[in-house]
Image (cartoon, rainbow, N blue to C red):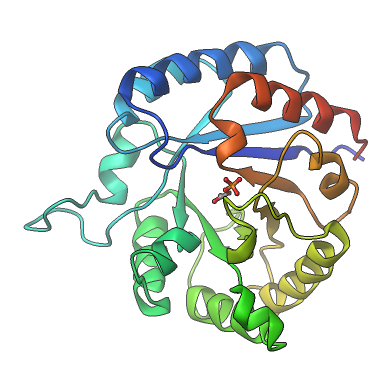
Length: 254
Ligand code: PGA
């Protein structure tokens, strides 16, 4: 089996411009030292996008946007369109990250508009889904995730060869240090896989887990066949912890 493991770093708003560019350079060195079994991508802030893009140029570390708006250009103060990120080297865009949904009150409808705009611009969306603690406790986790998947994906048109990326990120596990049990995560990945295959049959999804992934637990997740990789926030903002995550990930056979 030769499937790569996907290690994606969401830097959120943790780093300023200089810190972002410096860390991007470290990521490229690390990637260079690896064999081909790891696919790495970095999601810097919009502020640092150009500098990070330049630092990643000629490396195999891919670049992605943390958030986009769904209109190309116009009077939308504070927003950036997928085409603008693409022009600076973006390959991916996060869509519907839990902080967008729960801190900025982004709805499923807005997430859907972003999905369409990202695909239209030729970027690969990474659709993030996940339930809150309250929803999990009420036994509604699958229902919530299914609704997010349906509104994000139903009836979307993709070109051939397009890979669909989904991140399962339970809201209660993000940035809290309280990671989801790996067997539970695998169960949800299996559910996600079933729903997505019903919605977009020709595009088997790559499904990442996110939420308090650390060097100490990354191996737990990657042991499971349907956890194709991880989306890491806090622990991806320091080269020391990221290096340990990468090292541990390479040990797991695929
Ligand atoms: P965390 O964030 O690793 O800091 O929990 C993950 C994410 O939000 O993608």
